[in-house]
Amino acid sequence: MTTAVKPLSILSLSLISLLLGVLLSFGGRAIAQEEEEVFTQKEVEAEARRYIDQKSQEQQGVFLFQDPVENQPISLLFDRIRLVRTIAGYGYFAVVDFREKGFEPPKPYELDFWFKPRGKRLVLMDIRIHKVPRKEGNEWVLVSRLPVPWWWLPVSEHPGHTEYKRAWEVKAAIHEYLADKIRDGGGVLRIKDEKTGQEIPLEFVEIHNPVRRIPDKDYFACTDFREKGEPEKIYDIDFWLAEKNGKLVVEQVKIHKAPEKEDGRWIQVERYSFEAEKPVIVP
Image (tube, rainbow, N blue to C red; front, side, top):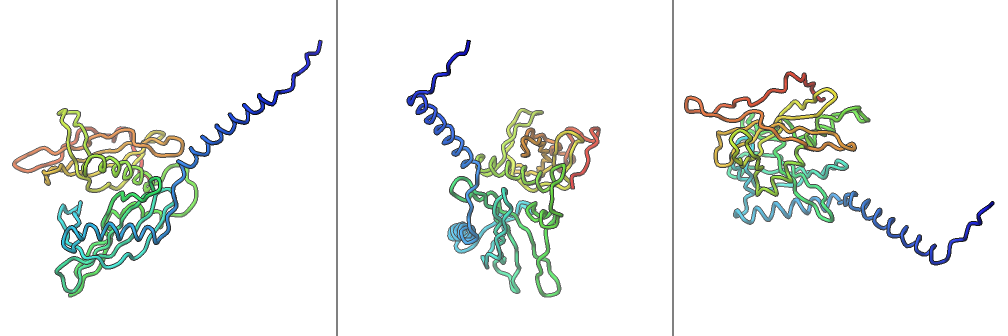
């Protein structure tokens, strides 16, 4: 016996159309939220200049920059924004020329301002010194500070897909994680020392070379941090990352070496070792 199929009523079709419309609307919003706003070079330059001008006005015309590596403030005078670089998915990088106040001939510095789109606005993620002055005769010349910021590494690489993530991609994921945590933490990364149970406010110094990977497992890199208010207390912090849906995610933060006082000075004492897992260097 054959059962007749009843045609869908106009009301049923209307309900189906409505549901499809709602689903497509939510799907479209999700896609839109994932897409980054695109900014022009002039917009990035304007945002960098706005920030520099604001900070300079607060210091009587001087852009006071705290060098995280040397832990010293540098009084800088703005010269120009030399160029703006873009790395798709990673943001914009304004290369800015400064000179240190009070030096003749001029003592130059080159700083990189890293901006990332967040919604409809540009967010300043970090500022790093790319080039520092070195005296040659009576003149100052610019030389790259090592290790160079990760955003300069893709320039020197061969394009194309690789089976594993590159070192700069690992550094980028760590740096973005740090930038967000430090902004939320009022300028410091707050971590809990599992040994003492105390929370430690840490100031970011730099990410080490090399980046490593445990075969068939996670990526990781060591970093230097300085305890806030204790400039001689340097921590070596390891960031462990896993790849999820093609994206690197920080899954664990561990103290690799902690400062301990010995004969009146601070030394780094290892808390754990990863050498038994035979890590390989990530190019």
